Length: 159
Image 1 (cartoon, one colour):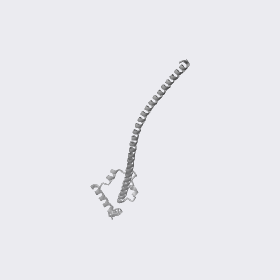
Image 2: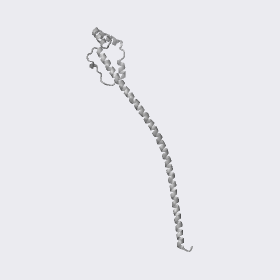
Image 3: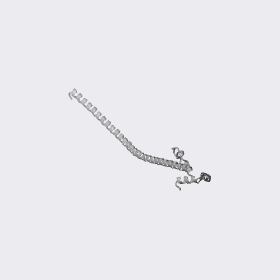
Image 4: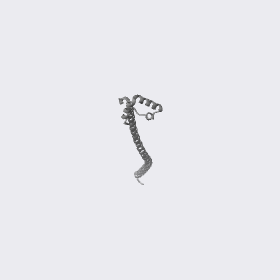
């Protein structure tokens, strides 16, 4: 090698090629590391997606069941309201019939306030009279006379 400049240039080119090769290897290593990291992240996200999908299906089923239960409860509430109205109407009808039997001329005197009906109260009102009550009813009927008795029986459709 006769030319020192040429030898120096060849050496510089070899060193530059070695540095370039080293940078390329580092870059490849970094890319491989990124691939591994992204694969791990993809696996983790896939597992999370599976769990979230399972949770979503469970929540959808639970939501459907709750909607069904709500619908059932609303239907029960409507039935209770209808029964309450029917019982209130029946109590009112019985009060009017009782007023007519007792000879009251204004059925409005026995109007009940529009409150909810306590079923126990309804049952107590419709229990058969005791023997003392029967005696009292008979005494009242005797005092009012046969004319009023016939009037009452006619009013309820027994005569």
